[in-house]
Amino acid sequence: MTRATFLALVAVLAACSPPIAVRHMDPRLVHEQLTSSELSTGKPSVPSRIALQRRGLMKRFRDDPKGALAVLHQEVVAGTAGPDELFVLAELSFHHAQHGGGRPYDLAAATYAWAFLFPDAGGKPPEPYDPRLRLAADLYNRAVTSAFETKDGREVELRAGRYELPFGAMDVAVDPTGFRWGNRQLTQFAPVAELEVRGLRNRYRSAGLGAPLAAGTTPIDEKAYDFVAPRVKVPVTALLRIDDARRGLVAGEIRATLELHAASEEHDVVIGGRKVPLEIEPTAALAYALAEAPIFSRELKGLLSGELIRAERRRTQLIALEPYRPGLVPVVLVHGTASSPARWAEMFNDLENDPRVRERFQFWAFIYDTGNPIAYSAMLLRRSLREAAGQLDPAGKDACLARMVVVGHSQGGLLTKMTAIDTGDRLWRNVSDRSLDDLQLKPETRDLLREAMFIQPLPYVRRLVFIATPHRGSFQARAWVTDLLARLVKMPSELTGMGTELLALRREKAVFAHVKRIPTSVENMSPANPFIRTLATIPVAPGVAAHSIIAVKGDGPPEKGNDGVVAYQSAHVDGVDSELVVRSEHSVQGNPQAIEEVRRILMLHAAQLDAAGDACRPGGMPGS
Image (cartoon, rainbow, N blue to C red; front, side, top):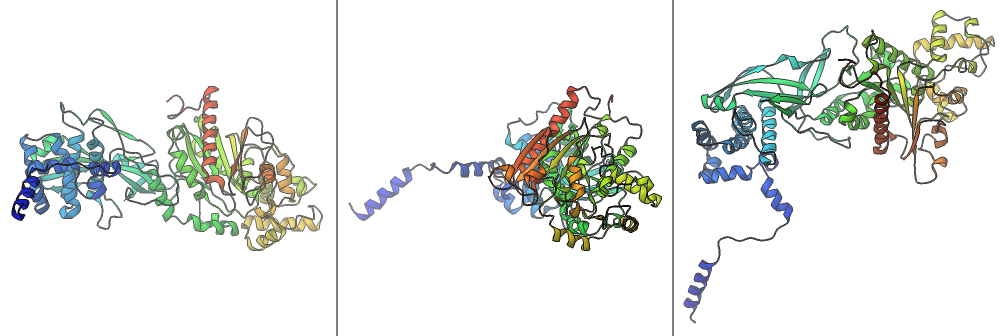
């Protein structure tokens, strides 16, 4: 065979080889190719590429995206194209918006996606298993966010106005009703879907429709009782409700209304007679708030300065992340030494995003200067809870407000216990063997001592949870530590004055010689301190349930272990309704096991209220 003949034969055989072939690949790569989209890879999805290729528009879309989009739009207007092309237009318009087309194409993408998801009367919505349904919702959400973002992308401006579209204009109205949140106005809206969240184990996101944002707040009535944290970021959803989208596409005139929905108030809206979930990013909003707040930097200051709370001019030492909601049981979180309410973030994030918990409970936190005497801080906690009950429900109509659960970590557990005990004069007998009324004291000093040391159970508290609580003191509260802190901790002025009076009485032997000064909280937690030893002997009041979560490091016998700060034997309490040992160091409140135990306790609390026919019911005030 000559060389020429051989080459001719090869050419014939090559011409006969099949132009279509398959090869085995990693299924994950095939799945990635089939499901990729503008949102995941920056390139159009398979359905959009098919639509372009069928019309011979692939090259034109690359070179002249405006022209290619205009061709597809005209097909929709003429009625020669249907829902498939609406989806394609939504994705390709968003693609062009991100590559120089700007706001007109973002708004166009949102309009096309809305028309695809919510067809006119008689139209058929996408099938629930059609992957384009979720992708169209995500395109709408991103397009709405992008359309109203500021140039730096830090905020979203929800403004009414007439906005340009590639095929006409959109008149946007703003519904003001959603901008009020309790006694606060929602302001400064930040997009959160693109935020990376660090420091929280779980990121919760409710998939749905709308642009997820984090909103700041400003009080409407400065005089109203309100303990929502001043720097709270509220998870909200901006929904651009588009009227008669298909007809508007034909006419080139779109009418729409911007609505704002706070996650604490609603998770769904009705569109075209259908219940539609809202897109919500609660974890991202929580992380955004904590990242900007100075609360972590105040933790050591709160240990050393007994006047920090007063300097911050707080109206109350309670903190909430949303307004009071009648018909929900308060869960009050009390932090420990050199700590702050921010340390409850992990637990709050998990529990608040459980619908079963959210439908029955509302979360508050108590903040205090942790170097102050424990009896003094516990007095402020009781005072704060009494004030909240009186201010929020002066007529006593909300039965749920009187079913509180108080959860305390470390020193906070001691404060928690002191909401539900009857001390009689037992604490006072550690100070003096004479009646308080017999001592020569200023009236304000006598009143302060009586409130702090003669304790009656609060009628609002029904259940306690102790977490890593040093009921019999902490072995870390050594003598040199307590002496050092006694020199460093600055007491509140009212306690300083009281200390001067008690010192004079000590010279007269009216108070015991060991009462040398007003003790710090760390002195109170020394295992040999009379205060902690007496407190350990006082039981929780009848009718109040109590639970213990005890942290123990390592895998040895719990009874011989500790968490690095508190020994098991100190944290153990006889007679509690339940006890759970968690293998952890002292900061156990963010441990998944501890969080699950608190969840179980809350569900038990709700179930027992229901089983008893209690007047506290979810969904608002009793009888509503």
